[in-house]
Length: 210
Image (cartoon, rainbow, N blue to C red; front, top):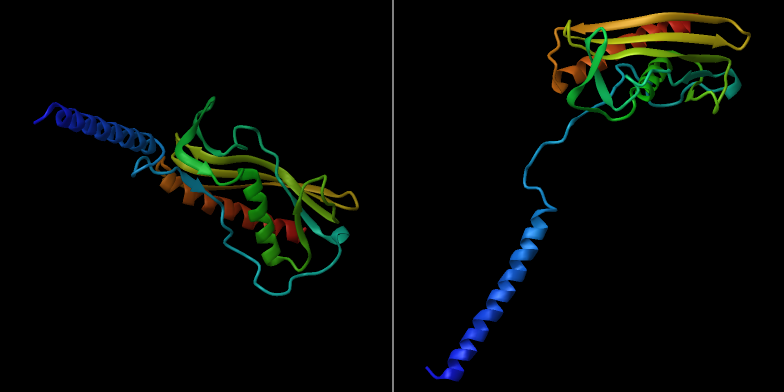
């Protein structure tokens, strides 16, 4: 083999190795952006009403005569995207791998409004104090919506407040528990939905009877 031919083959090998290094670098960089399996996403928890208004025409009227369902108040322990776990009287943790699709106060408002709407022969509006007003305003406070580790149960507790346009005010506490629940998202999620629906149904009955 002549010297010139040997040098030519050596240069060709260098170019091939250089191209291979570029390709390898691109593959390694791309692997940092892609996931082939990996950790599954967290469980997303939502509230779904057991009772819904049927399709078709609904009650009509003016907003002034409507029944308005407002977001309940809640402390920051509850009004976050995580599910609170009451460890003991003074300690709170959050359920692993579980996230609310939307803030629980907003979800509960929608659940209660739809339950009332399914039963009421009047206009039902959802909103906040600064958006709408009606002849009947339903507000309140979500006291508990989470898991109790000591008793292994899900608890939903809601203090409802109804204010009529004439000034009459009434309030009542509603509570539902689902016992025997394991401390994992797959069990707690459906139990929260069950308990929230029980509270919403009882509250809807009371609101409309008043």
